[in-house]
Image 1 (cartoon, rainbow, N blue to C red):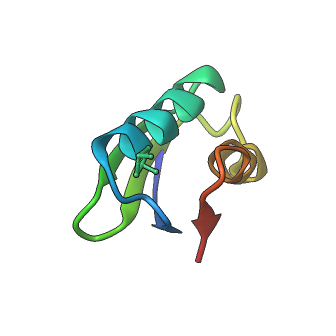
Image 2: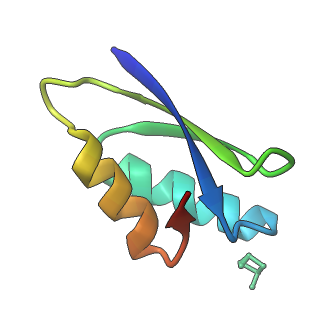
Amino acid sequence: MSEARLRVAGMTCESCADSVEGALRNIGAEGQVDLASQTVRVEYDESRVDMNSIRDAIEGKGYRIV
Ligand code: 9UX
């Protein structure tokens, strides 16, 4: 498993966090949002999920990776 921490702008409430975590789950990655630091810790199998799809999943929910 690989692990990445991304800074994501615009997540302000628990529903935002659930939305991002759900989008990551949908592509087979596991995300843990930390609202205080505006970051997402992502664990994923790099043979199945690539960083572009992780970015697309988060941005597809309307948040911006900074
Ligand atoms: Mo509630 Mo989070 O509208 O954007 S889901 S602040």
